[in-house]
Image (cartoon, rainbow, N blue to C red; front, side):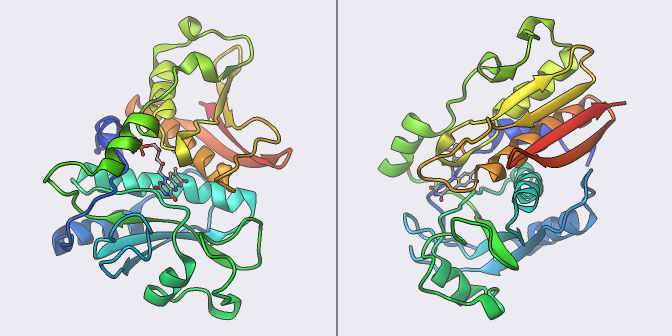
Length: 279
Ligand SMILES: Cc1cc2nc3c(=O)[nH]c(=O)nc-3n(C[C@H](O)[C@H](O)[C@H](O)COP(=O)(O)O)c2cc1C
């Protein structure tokens, strides 16, 4: 984990929505496989990362053609598990970015199409409902929380949809000040915490909502990342996934600065709370 330039990966990653219809080279897929099997997460989880092949049409991602290679992030659907899926999934996505592969977090995949290319629902198979993603609420058993294409973006110009996404919602991030809860101000933060928070605020979130909040204790030894109690978004039913993604960026930031910490994930007031206790 430590020999990867996570800062560059975070700064390079963008949601790609226009793919060439070519396979990722076997060598790179092998690298992703071994990264997934060796990666050590700093908390308990049961997230599975599954490779699958998709057909080259718009059925799965609905607005663009799927490339051949894809990943599914699977877990139970309680708050803890889906937030863990965000954390684990983002570390894998950033690793893929670091070896030159383009990705796009995708929550509203077509469930019937995913089941047809990657059967996973088993006894819970009910393809009529829901249509997009695994559903709105916690359900029994494991589901695919999100998927991502793995591939190479089209070189020949950016499609209008991408341009709109880029200008309107993609990549624009709010400054750290907008996310600080508690009394500590940005200019009082230690350089290491500031660095890790700078990476955290660049995390991707569904519809770029950036609904995370950061709470730093007065001795700057405990950092909490969560969303406001009761936060809801009209389009994205699982904002705790995004909080896990943001938490992974913060953790990687501490890793880049060689700072050891104990990571805990708890569910408080119905939402995921990630805590980093600096040793
Ligand atoms: C959990 C999650 C789910 C997402 N689901 C979708 C989706 O269903 N469709 C889509 O086009 N983009 C989806 N996105 C991509 C976001 O729109 C994108 O990350 C955000 O606008 C920021 O842009 P960037 O990834 O280029 O930095 C999702 C992102 C996240 C983090």
